[in-house]
Every structure is written in structure tokens, then in C-alpha cells.
View: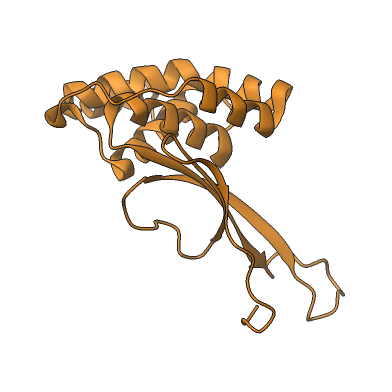
Length: 172
């Protein structure tokens, strides 16, 4: 695809966005490198402390809200355009921050699952790894990533909470 065609396609997508989605995208684009640097230099624990210290309420009307699912797509696109590292944790931190303003009230979730896809050749068939993923949910909404078991979450209302450990008799 020629560069001019890509630019035109991008302009069509931009013009199709609602005004609140455009603002959300611009803010996500500007926060992408900040989140990446904060996580790289300060680590996740420091970012969680910072999130706790900067709590805020949503300040937009319901017509200006951006849904969790739509916001995830906008943040992903902003990181792509920004050429920032496109991993789930910095994207989720940015989405969490922006949902404080553009609602609904967010919950930042970290989850894990068994990973048998990345076995080293010749490893025992019973061997497995662990995959982690970060995402944002509405704080009062349904779970969004059923393939992952939440181990940690953060909301403005509850702060950080860890998922309870499974009982010894529960299946792995």
C-alpha cells in the first residue's frame, strides 16, 4: 500500500471517531511514552503507588464516556502510532488513567495462565510456562479476559487487592 493511501485511510478513520474518542486517542498518544518510561524506570510497584496517590473522579457526562472495549482499541492504536513499546501493561496503565476522566470507573487487572505453547523442544510433556496479561475492566462490570486468572487488581475505591489463593483441593 502506498504511503498516500495509508494517510488517506488514517484520515477516514479519524473523521469517523466521536469527539470524545478523538480526545481519548490524543491523550493516550501523549501518555504512551510516559507510561512506558515510568514502568521501565520506576517499576510496577512505583506506578501502583503513583496511581493510588493520583486518584480522581470521572468528570465527563455520560454522552462523553468511552466504553472499555472501545478505549482498549484506541489505546492500542495510539501506542502503534506513537511507536511506543506495545505491551499490555503500559497500555493498561494509560487506559486506566484515561478512564478516570472518561469513565466508566476502571479496574486495572493483572492475570496469569498456564502456557504450554512456549515449551522448549525436548522438554517434558508435562512442562508448562506462565503467561501474564494486564487489562482494564469497568470496576463494577464483568470480567473481560476469562483465559487469565486474576492475581492482582487496582481500583480507586479499593486500592490494590490480591486474588485469594486457590484451596489445596481445587483443580489446577
